[in-house]
Length: 192
Image (cartoon, rainbow, N blue to C red; front, top):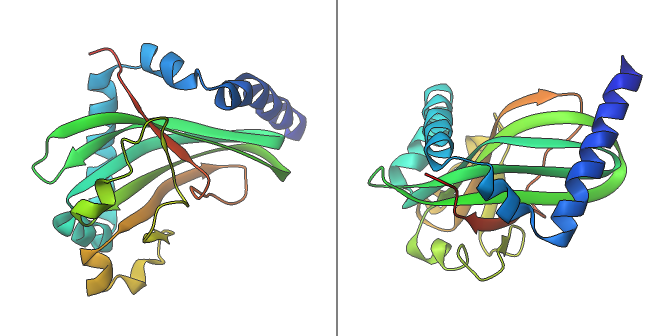
């Protein structure tokens, strides 16, 4: 069973990582994704997060927008890749754009994992980098606060009013650790 998981992770990495490194993954993903499906999945994931975590719901009430990635697939063997699509949900409830999150890493990890994450933009200044030409890399953004599930006890008034807050949810699979610190977020234009 472990051998099958390692082979699947290696196949995922070989198929996924070159696209991440070379850049056409955003175009490919957009061509194979439906805007209506991304919007539906993102709204459902955010509603589920709010229902399961009152602190996420509190952040959502104060956020200018929430960028939701309902499912990030991570896999690999030494060379690891992760990626998925999401939607920006404004405080009015309107979808204002579609995005892709992609990251690669190297290290002694093997396996496949799925998780979701939401970025809560708490002030207007938090938007300034999101549509930068060529994408936006998390970790280069000022005022990024990352909460793992159950660790959001440190949500304060300062957190509720400034910067960007990342929260993980719905983690499943056979791989240790989740991170968005090196993720590149790029706007995509999926078919309707």
